[in-house]
Length: 68
Length: 255
Image 1 (cartoon, rainbow over the protein chains, first blue to last red):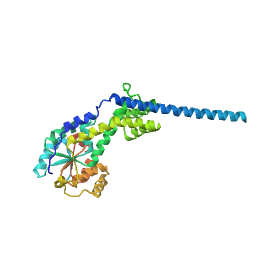
Image 2: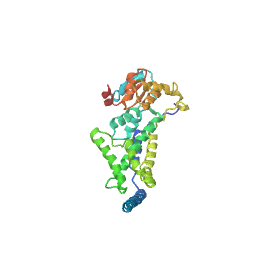
Image 3: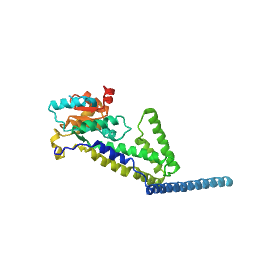
């Protein structure tokens, strides 16, 4: 080998520990919470759609019973 | 003839190697050694850390590894960082306010993991299946769910994994490569898949371990360091293989 490289295991651990201790910034928190609200909004809209389909089916069924 | 050597036997082992005229330029590290070096909850963390610091570094022995090792190392940290991030995100003190359904999905998988930790002494790290189950619940919420999951991954993985990758540089690990001019001196023959298959077929060792033993055979490096019984059993079953060094307790459990 042309160049001998010797490890620095303490520096390795020190650097690695930094990766697990990054604090969340206010921007991070806002970004994730905004995305979370979008999910809730989309889910509640889908639920409303589901309700209206159920309600429509129920009305259709009832009216077919009356007609029958 | 290859043998399994305890950490505590290293001084005498090294003296014998040197006395026999063997050059000890470097050693090959298994991925589990690298992970154990910087993750304290891992069994044998302290012993492995001190062995590398006080023996390998002190003797000026260089560290080598195969490319697979980095993949294994980063994949462990992917699972660890996601576990810690997602568990923190659903903690009552968290400033993140995830939708209830998502919190429930994370909590469910976290409970399974907690059970494994308590009853089997497992490390606090989601397995791939658990991560997949949580991700599925996010993706079930359409584009918005996917964007939220992507946001969490960026938050918990991108920068931390970049730091983990850079931290590896401090170990000054050299990736074994037959095509690197700087390493020509340590290669004695070509690394082939056929020989790795032969080593794997001996005792059914994992391929990552078989590749380490195979690479070792193709170089002048006299030993590898591992915490995995696959390497120990391979060496015990095949006298043509080179040596593997392990913490005393691992060897005691095997022999």
